[in-house]
Image (cartoon, rainbow, N blue to C red; front, side, top):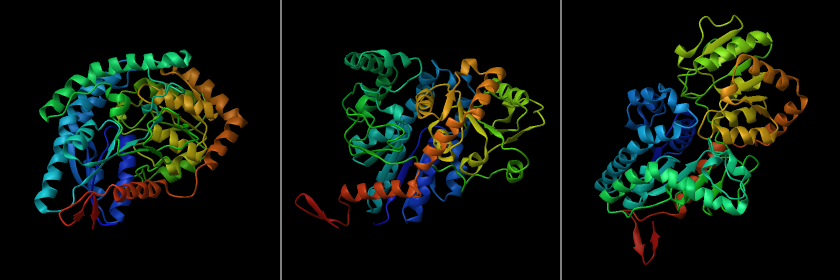
Length: 441
């Protein structure tokens, strides 16, 4: 198809940004121009990829946020993220998209198309106000509510026990709580641009009515009858940054130096996990096993580390996890997907956001044990890992899940779907001749 200007807008940590980097790499390979709009923390990766880059917040602001321990608190985290990141980003994202639209109009070129993550609410406003083509990408099933199979949100696991007929009333209560955070500032911004106020922001509105892609397979989260009709289901994107990040040079030798290690991470944006890593280090000692800790925020690591435990800033999970004996993690969707692909036994210690829902889905698949973060201590971790490592059924189910991943590149398939949608929804440009309701290029 003709080369286009594609604006990618992920909001979140590396687990949210990496899939968009992977999509951008493939789009750029096909000749499209890429602009990445995300936190300034990811500027170097965007430039390595050869993308134009526009931050909606500074690197310093991102680091200040992740340094706040409440960003992972099961009750306080969602409101904190909204007020410090998602809401301030509405205006920034909208304005950055608007600048690109105006630049295209001045140059007489085609209008940019936008591909945005779940929390890029400014992109959704730009779709309504500026008429940009918007594809919403949801990486995790927790964003889709259903009275038949409600997702698990922090503090709201009890919804699973509410009768089906009463669940819509619970969702209305949830909407009241969400709108109490989002609707005021969002509607104030909408009013500035002549748009009517909205309610139930995270019911239907945040899904693009033009195109919404769910990047997880049906065997991981079966579509429900009351999910939005426009959703197209693909597969986990699986891009782990390996073509842009620099892995520790000692990693290959580390993986072959003895028995398979247990790998530990608490997420790319976890900077306050002192207790997690201390308990993890002690659990390795109790088990007499090798461990690999992954984090770029080294201040949270115990000093010194046990002799059998090594630390790396970054490791591509696609290379590391197939060589691991077990994987201990927070339950982020990208991390969980890589573990499923590797077929490795998983111990999941969720904190907030989508992590509790992912932990429950992994446990239902029979590939993991969930250990609540409040009970994450050395003795409990060691006991859970002993169970995992001795359970042949967990290994069998892990292998069965790994076999569900096809040989096709899911990033290529997603870009195919994006391009098909753009062709189908092609808007007139300065070079098009309009005949009635149709367009002849």
